[in-house]
Image 1 (cartoon, rainbow, N blue to C red):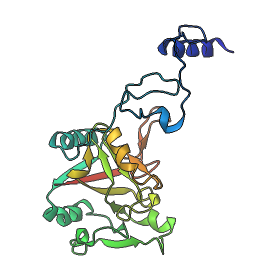
Image 2 (image 1 turned 45 degrees about the vertical axis):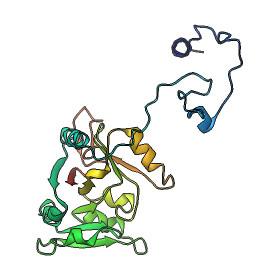
Image 3 (image 1 turned 90 degrees about the vertical axis):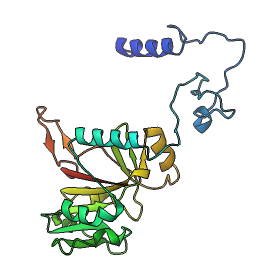
Image 4 (image 1 turned 45 degrees about the horizontal axis):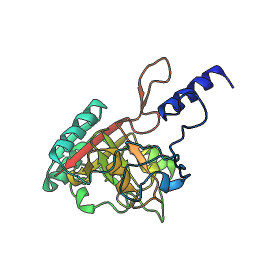
Length: 242
């Protein structure tokens, strides 16, 4: 075993209160060997414990959503990630979306998107293409269209992350990866404080594919030069409704 690996394992043992030896100190009782969900959730409501019974201070969901302070924090994080943010009322949404899609020849929308959102797009000269699961658009067609418009499942204030889970108003993952602009509508009630709240909500449909979006697509892998639009849209526009 390498010296580096020994150092890492020794640090882990110390963190677990086992010192530098491999044998845990005797506590006068056997430590239950638990696995899977049992290892993460204490059945009696006590502290969450790891596989060896070690208490873990994991954060849990708060159960709150749509708080004004969380919405403000989400906006701050999104702007820091170089996304653009607009706020509006439900009645103003169609006009705001037409403004956010100005300059693109067409926009792709998932089949389950609220059609009332699209009311002002014809007047703005924006062609609407619907990505129907029964007749999905080709990758070439998605790449050629100027923008994608979707809803979202949840938004995390603390990390400035928007999560899409493939529901009918969000569509296939590729719909928001190939077009250069993504306009995403987030309702105030979908904004939660932290990741545990989002995970609890997303756990209602564990079979759905998830896309976690924290700002426009960007990378600095080559010579630390920031390049946008490499792994997805370079232009993320969030419309907060509430």
